[in-house]
Each structure stands twice: as structure tokens, then as C-alpha cells.
Amino acid sequence: MLQRTLSIIKPDAVSRNLAGDILAMIQAAGLTVKATKMIQLTRAQAEAFYAVHKERPFYGSLCDFMTSGPVVVSALEGENAIQAYRDLMGATNPANAAEGTIRKRFALDVEKNAVHGSDAPETAAQEIPFFFSALEIVG
Ligand code: DAT
Ligand code: MG
Image 1 (cartoon, rainbow, N blue to C red):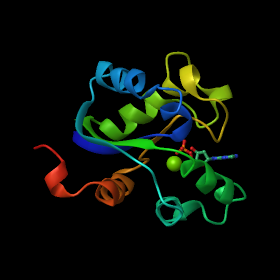
Image 2 (image 1 turned 90 degrees about the horizontal axis):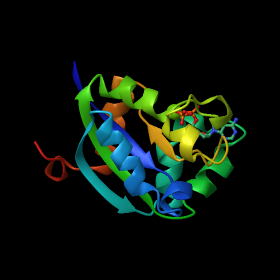
Image 3 (image 1 turned 180 degrees about the horizontal axis):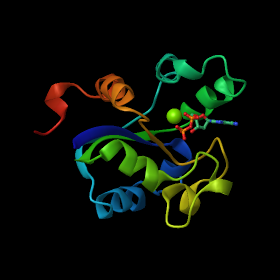
Image 4 (image 1 turned 180 degrees about the vertical axis):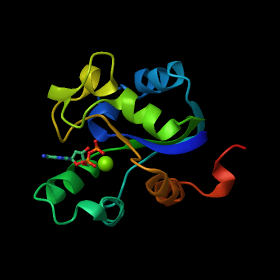
């Protein structure tokens, strides 16, 4: 099934100039970049984006981290893109991430873990419009 998913290359990876390497891995995996831009999240935007985690002990630290520098957000498309990108990302904690995954290669720890990817169709349907208008996504 052709799907879209939302990717964020997080501040730890952007600040180490890894955005190009990560986008190359995304494209090598067969996913197509339909939209991309570099932005710096405001505190309110980070809190809204991660609202599902607001009761978690790491929420404040996560929002601090996500606003600590620029991120590269992208809308990706491909066959089963949501799961395909989750597979390419690897486990949340890079200590558990498989060889060949983005997080195994580039993540620093469970928080500074290089990338975000939508986790379900309903999530992708919220997360893509959070960052991109219809006009910003190529057909
Ligand atoms: P994922 O990003 O793999 O979807 P998640 O949705 O469970 O993981 O959590 C969102 C982010 O929150 C995650 O990428 C990094 C941070 N996070 C998750 N668990 C954490 C923990 N135990 N300690 C610190 N940060 C954590
Ligand atoms: Mg998640």
C-alpha cells in the first residue's frame, strides 16, 4: 500500500551535519522525499507535537532537546512507508537498534536518537499536516 510518513531529523543529527547522510539512507531504502525543510521548533510546537508523551518523565527534557537547534522535517512516500521507515530508523534506544539502521549508525542515546518517524497511519495523518501545507508537498 502506498503510504506517507513524517520524518524528523533531530537536532543532534542536524548539528553533526548528518542530514544529507540520513536522507541518502532514506532514499536508498526506496522511500521518496515528497517535501522537506529545515526549521527550528518553538517550545509550544515541540510540546504540541509530543503531547501524547506529556505524562512521561522524559517529556520536559525531550521538548528542551527538540528545540535546541534546527531539525529537518520531511514527508516520505513509499510502499508501507510507515513501517518501512520505522524499520530503517531502528529501535528507540540505539543500544537495541539493529545493524544498518539510522539509529545504530548515528544516535547518541535514547533521547538524542537522530530521527523521528510516524508510528501509525492515524499518526502520519496528523503529523504531516502539522508541518506541511498541501501546497508544499509535491504530487
Ligand atoms: P520513537 O521515537 O521510537 O517513536 P517514542 O515515541 O516512544 O519513541 O518516544 C518519543 C521520543 O521520546 C523518543 O524518540 C526519544 C524520547 N524517549 C523515549 N523514551 C525515552 C526514555 N526512556 N528516556 C528519554 N527519552 C525517551
Ligand atoms: Mg514515537
